[in-house]
Image (tube, rainbow, N blue to C red):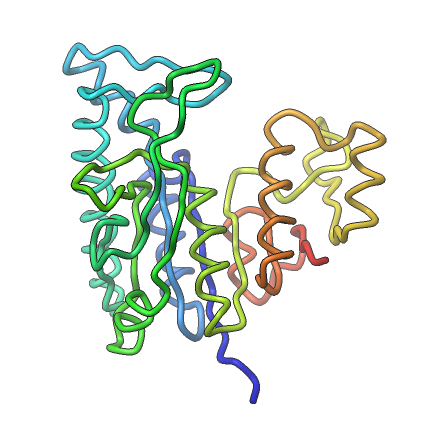
Length: 260
């Protein structure tokens, strides 16, 4: 029997920061057919509010060091301010959204990242996604909206990369559904030439991926994103789409689709 479809959509900080872009995105998300899950970050807002509170944000290789004070800000901003605003806006669009961290219904457990060269502090690496718990909410007619916070099962919340949460939730849910991921960001997709925003590579499979790596076209911030994608595809995710938010409409086909 064919599995039902489930879309997992991730949006980044730039959209969250821009009220009109966020409203447009949420309308597109509300119109997306079928069962769906939303995952969001909020790093820019967290940095802004932390600085107002006199807390300095420390980054190493683009990743945030999360000390105890930073974790408090992240919990307030991601789990409170950003998440609840989004949930309220979705309710206004007739989507019965439910805002969650990984601690809610024990949905996403992670383990504190071990200290190697850098001590990232209270940062979690996902260990387990409880797809049954998440599915209970979906079956009850709710649309889960996850912020980028997980827990260790021992009472500790952990800051967790939103891209990783997206792929791990999709992997977990693929036990029950045919899962598609939509990574929404500023670019139109994965670009052949970073200076030409229209040079979208429409389809990447394992073979094409190797070729792009060899040519050095996939580098910097795109590298971990695509590694993550192929890891998810190898673990049961059906298809991954990357591009700007208009890929959620049926009209736009100018984005990148990634399959094995």
